[in-house]
Length: 512
Ligand code: SF4
Image 1: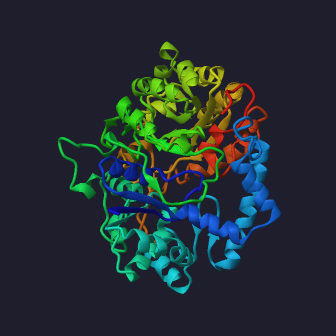
Image 2: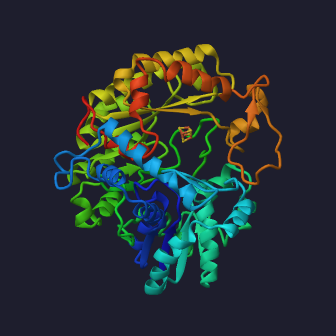
Image 3: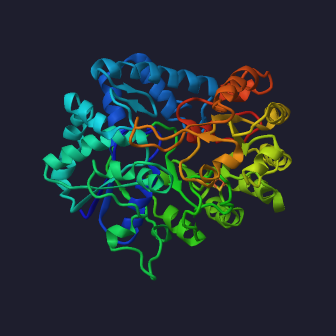
């Protein structure tokens, strides 16, 4: 085998990690023998199998076959209350991880060790005393290395939650005489807007910050972009993902067509628009047993470009595959019945960055969003039977009580069109435009302390107060407690977020 791609724990075990999957697809499409081993999935299953009980079995069974084994196509989809109960059982079980591995705590999306995750040296010290990952590598990775004898081993590091296991994996591989390359979105986003990439690199083997074509000698004029050619890759894990449908990551574009928000950590990412033929060829290359389960396509775009979305719709409609993705709630989505056509073609959920009900606040940060347009988009999506997942942002510099009230009014008045809610607090990415212009916005950016060597965000205050403190209180006291808004908040599970939300059964929305 030419390339073995490894996904270390910990990430939510509901779908193939997207960056690794697309890298494997791109290398496979170019004729390179490639396979992906999802060690994260194996990690969770190893834990669940060693802690089996009737309630755990029932919870896992529900999350994988909500309609009952053998009837899954007729009664597909989750009920919010049952989903909440099942994930609660999983979380309770995961508490036992701390008993097995003192000092380590595991949830369905994160792991915390005896040292902070922003401190690679501290993590290595903790791993030297007790490493919760090596039994997994001995059991799962050893046989794969023996059988497949890969020429290159690539580790995909997308989240900080994967850092402890990545450090452990690099050392484990070194003991086997293997020097991997570490790539993935964590390092590339750190290179853009965070502090500590050099520090991180000093603990890892060569870091690859490219899109993957560098492994083949780099992009060329004939082959400029990894995503131009994709073929369904070979997946080595035999374990099922914790989902009732396979979830396939795919992307219509990279970068963002708006690209102007002052606090965007992804500004100026290279722009790429996928061709409908590429997406069609990729989906047609999926094994028949995957297509037979009607996989749910997860569009990874920062914001789906409406024109490319329109070209994508006939592809999914012809194949009968559902999809969901993130969009800017602007008038572009309202043109020519785009949302209705998307629903007819398989769109089951749209994640909408509504962010605020205050146009003045949105304008201040160049968001280019109009709350009245967002309201129209929410209503149009709901009327078309598409689930809506509204992303709201609080704690922006200069946010006032009037801004909060406008947001509360929007959420309360549009509650019939909002199925799920993400209520988040603003973090200031290091090195974005707002960071450079902080004083214009009345922000006092905290001086760098030598606390943690890796930093993705930078604390700040306005008039001596971090805006997230009063914002957090407003969310708890007024937003979450509001009788119109509370149902969407309760319907939104804390774990298995977006993909499982697109698979929820809701009255007034199309079947998943
Ligand atoms: S819409 Fe999102 S991705 Fe695009 S510029 Fe704004 S914050 Fe960045």
